[in-house]
Image (cartoon, rainbow, N blue to C red):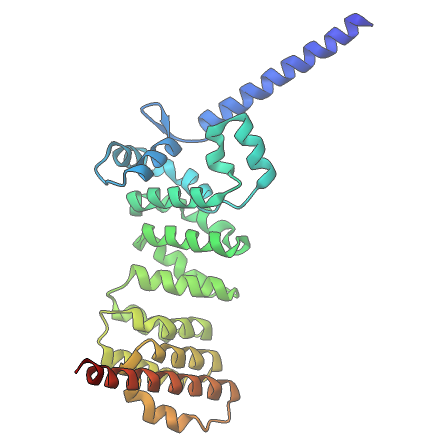
Length: 291
């Protein structure tokens, strides 16, 4: 009986040792390394001293495309409380891939994507694979990573414009506008897109395109109010608010449209008129107070 118990204990001990070795090997080989140190270690060092010519920055660039899978996992990390606590006890280095607090992973991963830029384009399939199921916060960071990749990400982003997920469409439009920030043709193409969500988000963000003259922005938004789809027209009206006092030139047209039979659009127009008039009166009264 004692011999049997000893055998069971011995087998349990060897099983524990094998498990520990397996965890250690997984931790070691789960991340690419440079000069013996894992990517996560270099990312943490860079996070403490964000200088693009530092040893950490050089190391991350040297790891190059091999960093993409790890960075993609980090940037799409979700809260995993139980697994996070277990891995913290087993192996601190493993925490970078399964932390119960994903914010650190997101921040560190963004350092990597910013430093690598288009070099990290091989991460695109992983970034796009399951982002529809991600929580809003993770989705935000995934698209920020895609924006850092830049031009190589554009074909994938244009495919996302056909998504039935409104949030996905919104992020895709923002990312395309961010990457092609000085390209008026990109804005024109987005406004001609058959999906009203794509047109609507482009109208909404048009005021952030500083390279487009304010007069052109105003005309684009005024045409947007006549969009055949209510959502796109509403977003154009909201976009006018972003022009602040410059939108006062749109007031005559907005006054006309207040009588529209489209109740949803009429409410949006009334709100826009109120806010634009408020900005106009504030900008006129400010000099008087100064004197």
